[in-house]
Length: 254
Image 1 (cartoon, rainbow, N blue to C red):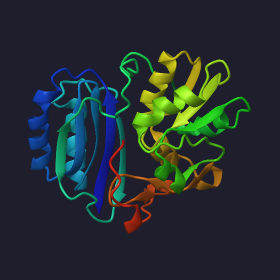
Image 2: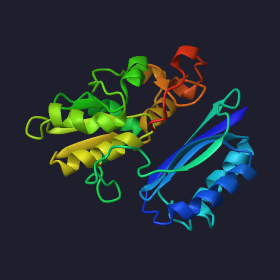
Image 3: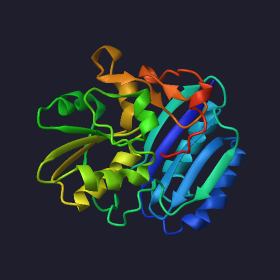
């Protein structure tokens, strides 16, 4: 069985260019495959390998010399795959670890209120709450939360255009957002706060954490959760749904 780690943290990494090769070499030494993005605003990635190799990688991120203790608030989730879900290892440098294109949206300065999976159902059923799916349209089509608004975007970079056209701080007083692993709605919350929205919430750890922790009998999730690897989609308990060829080929957006 292959172990999969999905992780991110918004944190100042002014030396991100110098980190690329040491990080790639460390991952290669553990025979890990997958992708990692490095930017001045943080780290974002999904890697897979032998369970002991993934555990060694997670320990290095949190406690090793490579990041010197800077990843002290890392969002890290583990799942499994029946076979290696990635073809190779990629460590890339980017302007943003998730692309929005709004310099005012800085999660290292301000983000919305985190909501744990156990509290999410109560929040999204509040009568005055706008529940917003921040993912791409093809992901929403595979599954989403009951009553959530689909922004109908092809990539996360279009979210700011949706917000400008459809959201109003005077009318939408309370907004609850979610995404696959938490990173997109974390940046989207920073964007809305910068635009003057008063109450913005987001699901801590994303859909994956919700599917891992909330029993299926109590779940308000409907459908499957798309993931950007060859597993294609995960269900409750992060169970692998299996590969569907027609769903492959989408560009990683988280």
